Length: 287
Image (tube, rainbow, N blue to C red; front, top):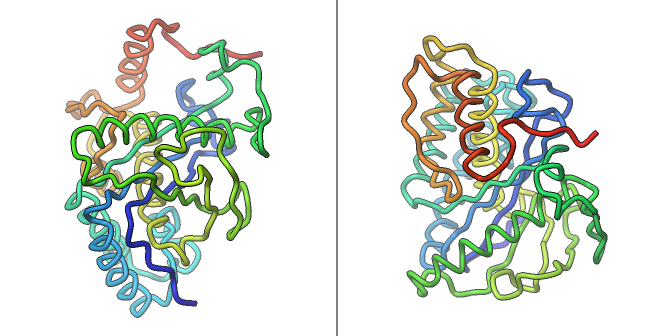
């Protein structure tokens, strides 16, 4: 199948999380659901399409895969189980370089069982147009739509030529099968429709940008929440190098001494951030 060419600005969503996996940290619960958006401005869309086609064609020719799932690439699972570590690391590095070269804007949103306790206004789930915010995946996607729209409006105000709105929004299949669309309750000035177009990443290469960003952010948080301070392992270094290349609009860049890079420092920084926002120092249970 020939993938459709997306030559206009667009927004790509992919989800991540650690279902059932226990980090040992209250700040990274197993119920956590996360969505990550990569925004491709209008002025670089055609170039991104061309670069992605060249990159993916090269990967297809060398490894016989039609799409990149970076969790599998990093872990050496599935079609990647027999690919040497060095070659898998090279693929991760190349994607990080692409993200960094174009400085693609990224927005990340996570929700978990304590989100509603932190924000009482969200304590009563609602249904609208097929969306059910009792489902954390639905809830997180809608929150991300709101956050992305807010950031895009600000960026458009600074550089209107980069944002010929509204942009189509593509999300990786899951909530709905590939090929289905679902109308959104708001954000029509930023998101075309407004609706989410659920597709698979083999057909819409831009989704593989979102897969990469979602994996790197999720894995970086997992490393920070579970490790003890000490030397960085080669696997950790690969992820952290890629993480440093990401332009995440709603994250504050931090330089962390290696002796503080572990669960204790991670939780201390998040506690301080929660206090600054008027929240309890640690997440509250909803039960």
